[in-house]
Amino acid sequence: MNRSHWLDHTILWVGILFLLTPVWLLIASSTHSTQTILQEGLQFLPGSEGFAAYKTALTKATGFTDTATGYRMLLNSTIMGLGFAIGKILISMMAAYALVYFRIPFAGFLFWIIFSTLLLPLEVRIVPSYDVVSQLGLLNSYTGLIVPLIASATATFYFQQFYKTIPNELLEAAQLDNAGPFRFFFDILVPLSRTMIAAMFIIMFVVGWNQYLWPIMMTTEESYYTIIMGIKNILSVIRESRVPDFNVAFALVVLSLVPPVAVVIIFQRWFIQGLVESEK
Image (cartoon, rainbow, N blue to C red; front, side, top):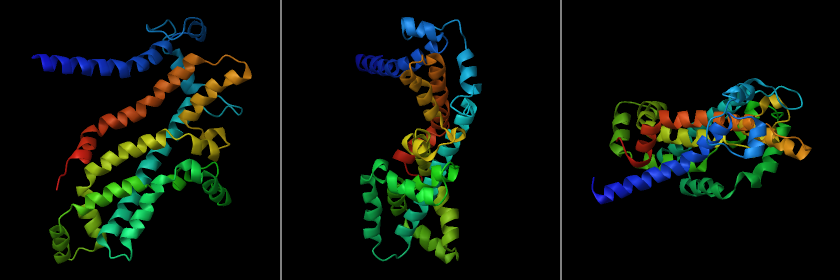
C-alpha cells in the first residue's frame, strides 16, 4: 500500500468512526438505567440493563390515552414513508410523462410553475393545506397524512430529464407496434426507469419517515402518532418537572433508524445506478 492509499484509508476510517460513534453511544447508553445516564452522562460501554429499554419502548403505551406503543408508532411511520415514496413516484412519473411525450400547450411554462414550488417550503403552505384537509374531514387519517404532500417537483424534474434522454427510436418502434400511451408507459418507460425509481424511493421514504411538523398538525389521536413524535413526547416531560426515560428514548431513536437503513441497504445498488448511470 503506497502512502496515498494509506492516507485515503485513514481519512475514510476517521470519517466512519465520526459518523458511527454517536450511534454507538445511543446503543450503549440505552442498555443503562436512567439514573446512570443522569449521573454519569452518555455511556460508551454496554450496561447491565440489556435490551429491557427496547422491550419497554416497543410495548409500553404512552401519552394521555395510552394508545401509542412503539409498535404502533413504527407502523404509522412505515405507512407514511411508503405512502410518501409510492405516491410521489407515481405522480411524478405521470407528470413527467405528460410533459415530455404529450403536446400540451405551454408545457415548458407549466414545468417551470411546477419547479417553482420548490421555493415554497411546507411551513408556508401548511395553514391552507390544513384548512383544506380539515374541510374534507381527513384529520386523524392516513389519507390526510399522506395525500396533501405527495406532489414532488424534485422527482418530476428528475424523471423529466430522464425521459428526455430516451431515444425517439423507442417511441417510433412502439408506435409501429401499435402500442398506445399506456402500453408504452408501462412496458417501456417503467422498466427503463427502475433504477431511477429505486433512487427516488429511498429519498422519498426517508423524507416521509422523518416528517414531524405535518403529522403533529394533522393528528390529535395518539393512535396516529409517528415514531418521531413518540421520541419528542418522551423527552418533553422535562417541561413537566419529571425525569424522562432517557434509556427508553435512546432505544426508540435506535429503533427509528432501522427501517430507513434497511431501505438504503436493500436499494443501494439501484440507488447508485439511478443517480450516475443509464441503462438505455
